[in-house]
Image (cartoon, rainbow, N blue to C red; front, side, top):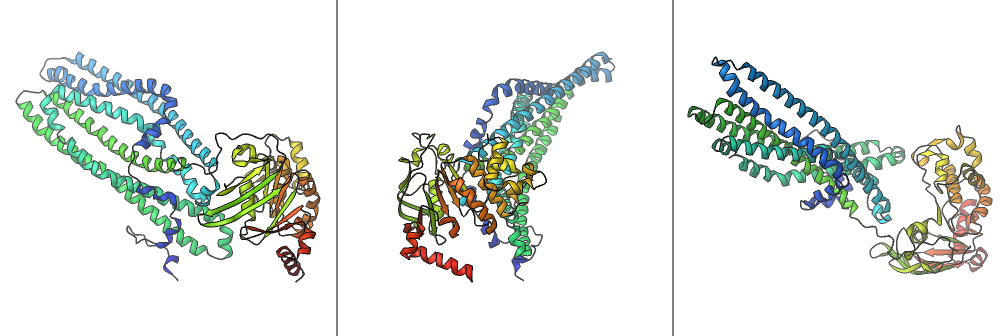
Length: 618
């Protein structure tokens, strides 16, 4: 058995495994980008709509909570110097001690109330921001062209909308406000320390520059570590998504062990990258603690000297110790917050990397809407390539009159589906034009164009929901009666009515509870309900049995009547009645004409038909 089939050892270091290169995608190269503070400004834009709600209330609560917290050590120092020491010395100032104690209790209650309200409010605002970010990235993905999805697996896209957005939650729910609180607290403590005793305050803060020098040197490594975590998670999700979708193939070829082994490899790399990032993330804590210990050392020795020389009182020293303790606490939180910012930066870079991708196919500024088209179509000297230098179509020209049915036939890879993709404007040609009613389709708004084009694919996609909703997807404002009329027209009503809940039967993703033929019938009903001017059938009857196909031929006459239609099929029964049959080979039109003309011509089409009959009669 090969090593890749074995479960990887639980180790902290691992040699690179070439298998994982299988999931190195174009978008993973983001790791090499320099740290960009502009990303934080872009994230800050999402806070603007809530600024009026966020700033007044939260700042008031923040200032109130910070002031009450900073006041407590001073109250304690006053209690020691003016109440406790006189009591210990026989002065009997118990009344003043009670006043200080009650004052502290009131301050703690105010601080608790302000913090509770602030946390609750920031969580609400933060979740709204996360909602807006997730909405925007999903909305943008819906607009991206097919070439974007051609190069990226579903799992890699999924991780941007889920994991990467989720990692921004802490930043927006409490991170931003906590940074403000900690900064205000730090400034307040520094002012108080220098005011209480300038020399002692300066002495205990002498270690701060050293701490910043050390922590700054860790920044680049931590950022790259978290970027690596995001990359590994994207690859893991991509493989997981692919494995779930391809589970039938995996089990059919008994490749479960291979799949598990490969998943374990990726899972191990994900774990190791997370451990490394987490370890580096925690390195801020020891830096703060060591710096704080040095500061405490200075405080106790130099503070004792100042007490001995009568420059400060014991109460003032206690207040100093409390303020110094409070001083390192926000610095520690700011260090953790910086790590949190690095995590958010790694995620935001990946999110905005998607959002900065412009769709190759988009509306021109001067694009117009065509409310009612006739259906005259012209392919004018079309050249197209999926990859640069590899032409899929080589100067195709074809005129189609409104209401005509056109059948494309040819070997796999001849360019049939590419013609359809260009007509729907899923891609734009490298050269040439596609015209509808004399209008270049690039001058027609995408929504207007595609709303008048119906398409039925061989691999019919069924969404999670009811059968009625899946049919209504063709026209969302259709009534229940119109849905059922469309289903009856394509002979789908009988099998739907025979289901336990009829049209309200719930189907899961891709409609796995339905047969392939049933799914295609639903797709036919969906297309008929949309009532398009141009109809495309791309191997739409390939998975329908002969008996069902005979039933659907009559429905097709209704479906195709009065529409410009394009049919890609290999079955003679589907294409023989087409007005024009276009024979394609290696991106060129080799023959065209009706069935009788092409049979008499005895060319490529005749060869395809003869081969089909020979296969069926074998």
